[in-house]
Amino acid sequence: MLTLVDLRDNQIDTMRDLSEHYFLEALLLGNNKIKTIKGVNQLRYLQTLDLSHNSLYAIEGLDYIPIRELNLSHNNLISVEGLSNLPCLSALNVSNNSITTLFPLSKCSNLTYVDASHNELNYIRQVEFLADIEWLQVFSMHNNPCYSKPHYRLRVIFRLPNLQKLDNISISYEEKV
Image 1: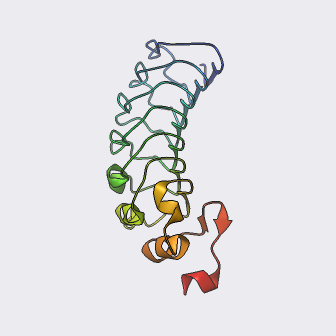
Image 2: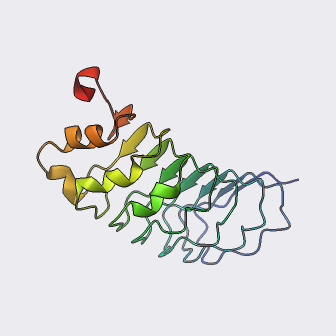
């Protein structure tokens, strides 16, 4: 009946099959050397997965798991492809990677929080892929190439009118107007 596993900071380089721990709710694997996500596809109660500070190049092996919180920050990701089959995903951290587009997130309709800071997003218009996500309230995109463009903040707020916070700063009523 194991529900929480904390294996952070253990120099782990390979994920093994965890299907025997069917009731696992939180799996913390940050600060390891993992290159491939595997062994979690049978975990039907998994809600929190932390794979930050690893060596991931792709997001795979997570289809139809009820993950609500996913931390993939500080990896080697160039794409967020592979998240569209996570129906419960509400909080996503993909900061400090090399991501160039937010398009695959357009299918993640339950997102409320996204941190895509410190990536390679060149165009402010990338946020338009998130415009139909009606529950998105907190979004971070600072320290991307587009962050230094004129009127960055107002342009993002205009494209995402439901946001409450942008880059860790609350959005004022005046900014929304």
